[in-house]
Length: 200
DNA sequence: CATGGGATTGACT
DNA sequence: GTCAATCCCATGC
Image (cartoon, rainbow, N blue to C red; front, side, top):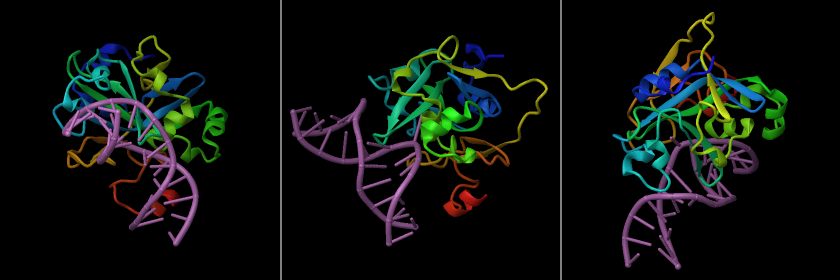
């Protein structure tokens, strides 16, 4: 059952929390969302904080719009726009548990380990074939879809912690992860050694 | 028009 | 743990 635009037209932190356990699909590849982060125009880590520009105008569009941007000149990061139209806010999808199209993901990523296919915001866009060309598309009727958590499936326990890799507003606990998942981008709390992440 | 920085990743010490 | 790759875009002259 696909999520509708109304699901995203809520406070961005609620949407970020509720997206954990939902399924992100593009083409023949799909994964269960296990890690998200919320961004809102009111805080400086959000691209929309500076207002509407050529880059950020998508963040102010209607709920359910897809925002894809290039990070560090290399990676594409995918976000889902939230809150009423005119408010700049979005949820960054940071990690997935791969569930469909594993071989396509392996081919695109150039590695086999399932834990490493989608365990990061740049990794999952590469695994699912999501590029900048999808910026501005819609999760309702567009190439990227989000499916609700199945009713017979238990709601995952969600851990709240601080966001990863930012310098501004780094203290806000706006990161949401599925407790115990082996597919998150980094262990919690953040700051543990990277070797622990690989073996855990 | 030139410049600097970034919501990351992977390779290397 | 440290660091370079790489490019779009916002900013400033």
